[in-house]
Image 1 (spheres, rainbow, N blue to C red):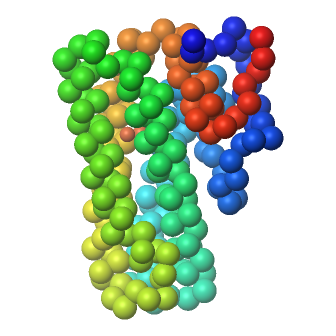
Image 2 (image 1 turned 90 degrees about the vertical axis):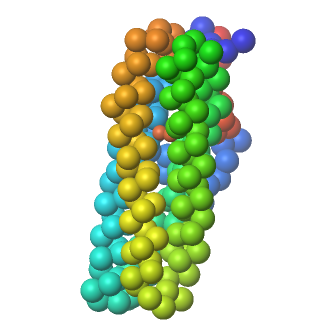
Length: 193
Ligand SMILES: [Fe+2]
Ligand SMILES: [Fe+2]
């Protein structure tokens, strides 16, 4: 059965996975939609940083700070994106599917977006992972910009079209259950009782 009678903070347990210094942008798992929104906010910030990195690379070439930033960006997306897509696809979508044609259509579209974003990331990741091998900064820019745009437009669609519908569809206890599921997916220990 989903959920727990006990509300409150979800504490990180000893079995929490080590994700090599990755700091989860979500700190409060008592509301699943808030977890997703915390990720969205941070994705938008990192998208701006990615675009800034591409511009600096084109103007100044790669220095030590630029190489570090490329690796930091790679690390961020490689950790955050699978977690976020898994939160949506495993903790949220199954709970709201088959309620209406409109919602089902939105879920289908959003899941397709995830595939497209991940495919785009598949082109960008090797460049950020080995920035010293970027022979042509223009190429990095040509790959980074579509990725940033895809992800940003997807987030705007979720924030502006999808989440407002969920707010009326999901009672607060369901939002709590979703948050607890997200915590479980991270191997976090839940409060007992
Ligand atoms: Fe999404
Ligand atoms: Fe999202």
